Amino acid sequence: MTTELWTSVDHYFAGKILHGDEALEQALVANTAAGLPAIDVSPLQGKLLHLLVRMNRARRVLEVGTLGGYSAIWLASALPGDGQLVTLELEPHHAEVARLNVARAGLAARVDIRVGPALGSLDALIAAGGEPFDLVFIDADKPSNPDYFTRALALTHPGSVIVVDNVVRGGRVADAASTDAAVVGVRRLHDLIASEARVTATAIQTVGTKGHDGFTIALVTG
Ligand code: SAH
Ligand code: DHB
Ligand code: MG
Image (cartoon, rainbow, N blue to C red):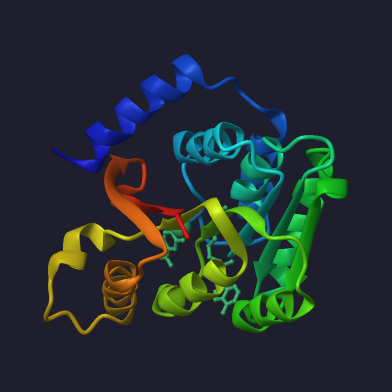
């Protein structure tokens, strides 16, 4: 089995049950034109994020790692009119591209893009003591996953959902001897989840246009 086959299956499902969305497609074109890496979630994965927001009736969503705003559009378009997405991005250029993409999608009023190292933005959110988030999507630098997850716990409530992208690393997550910083970060995240009484979680491997990948999905229980 190959990424080629997985891609054709992704195209089958996407062609069948995703309705082409002009703003989402334009965002990918704009990202490429602006030189951003094509590491956005896939369309079917974006729809999963969208459905998780709706299934959880989330009103406040937090994203770590905006890139060009492709996943942000999937998340924000699932929110009610008074909902809000706060999304954190290190690179000013990425954030600027995202701002334009989100505006083109008609979602500017619902999306708050904060530029800077996510750890600093998360600590500022914690210090500000605002309303908790109902769903958090962690998708930035993988070595910082444990730090982001700890902050996410401080910013959520029982019933909130925390989703972490790219936890499989092409299967290398199972290699306890790996010295790859991303693999080490993902493994430390799962050590943390294993020892954290306030969450219950699963991890789902995915195949598709992004190869062999996966999500960890945690429910905050206490
Ligand atoms: N969620 C996006 C993809 C994010 S790619 C989507 O699916 O459309 C990862 C992003 O995290 C990149 O834009 C990168 O610049 C950003 N990033 C990396 N390190 C970061 C940090 N320390 N703080 C905030 N963002 C960071
Ligand atoms: C990478 C980052 C991602 O968030 C992703 O979904 C795929 C790849 C990367 O840094 O290579
Ligand atoms: Mg990702």
